[in-house]
Amino acid sequence: MSSTNLCDAATLPRYPTIFVFKDSTVDPSNNDFLPAMIKSNFFPYGQDFPDHIPTGRFTNGRLITNFLASLLEIKELLPPYMDPMLSKDKHRRVLALRLLDWGWISARTRAIPELRAPTEEYAIPVVYHTVGCCGSGFWAIGPLCNAATPTCSNPSQFIFWDAVHPTEEVYKVAATLAADKLL
Image (cartoon, rainbow, N blue to C red):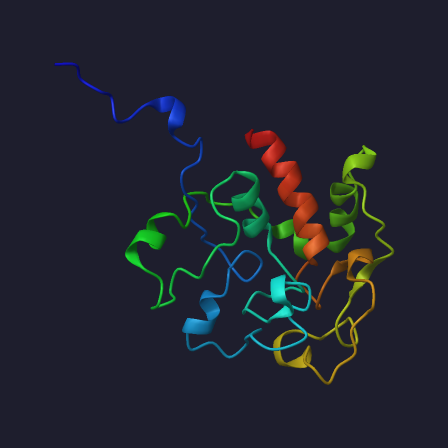
């Protein structure tokens, strides 16, 4: 009788799961399940998300955590851990990665050189780095960034979606740079 090793290391993913602990810059909409005063589950948040739906993510699309989970082949989109409709099986695949301190997001002047990588591969055409894409660009966040406020037509040229949260393009570049270091 031969024994079969059911736990072959070659078939296991390098990063089997991902856990997200932080704030609105990485939260995949757990805020929707909390008694929070500021939410983002309405348009124009999510305008560049698949199916163009607001999901409670504080950006125009996907977050760095979504891109990292995808690049690490864990999951295409992270669900909110607090969603009562999420099965126990899906909870196991949600996250084991504590992200770095994202203080660079609020330090706008320091953020620009860090986001412009030295190679063309990561270059993004950032034109607007002191204002956000939504609303006035200075104070709009949560309820002040809504369907009645104007948004820019080119979010990929902005570092910030609202007054403090990066655009999907910035999250994508940051996730690619982080994944390069992890892989």
